[in-house]
Every structure is written in structure tokens, then in C-alpha cells.
Amino acid sequence: MRGDEDAKLLEDMMTCQEAVFRICLGFSRNASDAEDLSQDVYLKAYRSLQNVRHPYLVKEWLFRIARNTSLDHGKRQRLARELERAAGPRSAVDPKTPETSSMTRERLESLKTAISRLPRKQREVFVLREYGGLSYEELGRVVGAKSGTVMSRLNRARAAVASFVKKAEHG
Amino acid sequence: MGKSIEPQDLEKIDRLVHAEVVQALEKFRAGDFEGRVYRRIAAEPRPAKGIMFPAKIAVLVAAVLVLAISAAVTIFNPSRSPLPVPIDPGDFAAVLSRLPSFSRPASELPSRPAAEAFLSEAGRAFTSVLASAGGAEQAEQGAEEGHAVRPAPPRPAPLTMRKRMEILFRDKVIERVLLSCAHRTKEV
Image 1 (spheres, chains in turn purple, brown):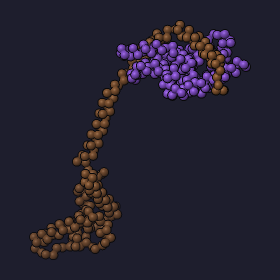
Image 2: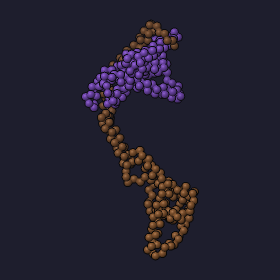
Image 3: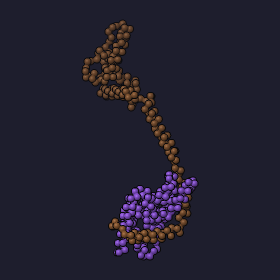
Image 4: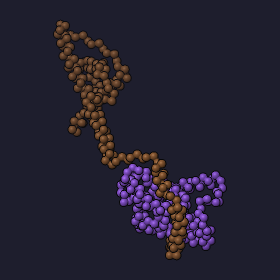
């Protein structure tokens, strides 16, 4: 540890570990990936601790790192999927899928698909709000938009997700 | 995908998200996340201490100072030649002395308006000074040797085109330097 201040900052950041995990889960749609991503987020934050000028904004800074890390991970995943698709048929069984009842799994699957189909800006506000539990002000600061814009994006994202899930349920 | 949203749909989404989060958090809490993070941090190579803000300013100021000093030395260096390529004064004098207008007195110069127009103002002034100096020198020489009529100087070999171009170039260089000096003096 580089100093008492850094140790204190890291301790403060650790209080947000579940929020960070939830955000990563919202983006990655997978618990194991979300945990790995959360660790990456904390490691990145630790590497950049000397850049923290306002310790009271450390929570939002951490959420921003979580968002960026998850989005980067998403891009890499998409690329890997494309390569996999090009290489051959994909395995039908996902080993990381949690063991849940088939109905819940189906619903969660439809939620996952709905979120993944959202435009990037809508997806990030949806995940940060629904999974991360951020306030509108925090959301605005994290994504760099006004509260009104954030609310409008969130509303559109919710409507799109609800509509998709409903359609999936009714066949 | 419509934009309107019914409350029960919103609740459904909330329930789904909640179910997913609760399930995932159970696994997350069971694992030693904090311990893993600290272990990874401990395995990290110690990051170099970032340069402090005042230190950055000091480095910037030092760099600007070095640049300013080197620029000042380059501009105001008195020993620096104003010409891009240094010309040996001996060579310059040799070339000038081979010029017909420089080696003969002004009275013997052919009255050619084209040749006069060819010379710059500085060149003409220099020619007349050289001619008067040459005349005085020859008069002294004649008095010493006791004869009034001096022998005709040997006719110099005609200059090649390359030599003429060299002379012209050097004349232009001198003119430019003088002009730039005159402009600089005006500005000051």
C-alpha cells in the first residue's frame, strides 16, 4: 500500500463492492464474469489512485470505471462470439448459466436479450439504474448527461425491455 | 418497441432484475471478493509514484526556460555569421578583384547603362569608392617612379558564367543582409 490515504480510499471503495458487482452483472449478464470484472475494476482503480483529486467523488469514479470496463468486456465478448461463429457451431450448453428453474431461466434469458438489444446509451442508464441503483444525479454524472436526458433514456429503455419481455412470454 | 410503459410491466422488470441480482449476490457474498482483490493488488508490481502537480509545473517551466535561452543564444549570438554558408573574406576579395568594374578605375569603365543597371546600389557605391582609392594609389605610384603616364593594366581574363552567377549570388546575399539590417534598425 502506498500510504494511509490510498488505503483509506481503497477501503471506501470496498464499501461499494456490491454496487460495482451489480453494475458488472447488468452489463455482462453473467455472475462469474461480473465477479471477474469487479476485480478488474478495483485493480484499475488501485492503479489510478494517484489521479483521484476529489475523494468525495470516488464512488462515481468507481462506477464510471465499472461501466467502461464492462463495455470493453462486452466488445471483446462480441468479437469472440463472432470468431467462434466463424470457426464452427457453438456449444448449446453454457456452463456459467446459474441453476434455476426453467421458467425463471427463460424469463431471465428474455431479459438478457432485451437488455442486449438496447442501444448503448439506453443500456448503460438502464443497467446503472436498475442494477447499480444509482440516483438520477449520479447517473447524469457517470454517463456525462443531464438528469432530464437520463430520465428520458431510462424511460425508453424500460419501455423497450418491458415490451420485449411481454412479447417473449406470449410466444 | 413502444414508448409507453404500464406499471405492471415495470414491476415485472423490477422483479426479474431483483431475482437475478439476489441470485448472483448470493454467490458473490459466498466468495471472498475483498480478499481476492487485495491478493491481486499485492501481486501487482508497485506502481511508480505519480509526479506531483507542483513538480509537473517545475518541469514545464524548466523546459520553457531552456527553450527560451537556446532561442536567445541562437538569435543574438554576435559571432554567428548572417549568411547561411560562411564565405571566406579572402575568396570574396579575390572574386571582387577579378571583376572588371572593380579592378579598373571608374574613368575606364565603359558607359553601359545595362551594366550599371545590373549592379545594385550598394555595388555602385562600392565601385566608386574602389575606383577613387585605386586612382589615388596609382598617382602615388607614378610620382614615386617618376613617370606620369602609367602603363595600361593587363586585361583580366573573361569570367566564366559560373563565376558571374557566384558573384551575382553573393551580391544579392549582401544586399539582403543589408536590407534586413536596415529593416531591423527601423523596427528597433
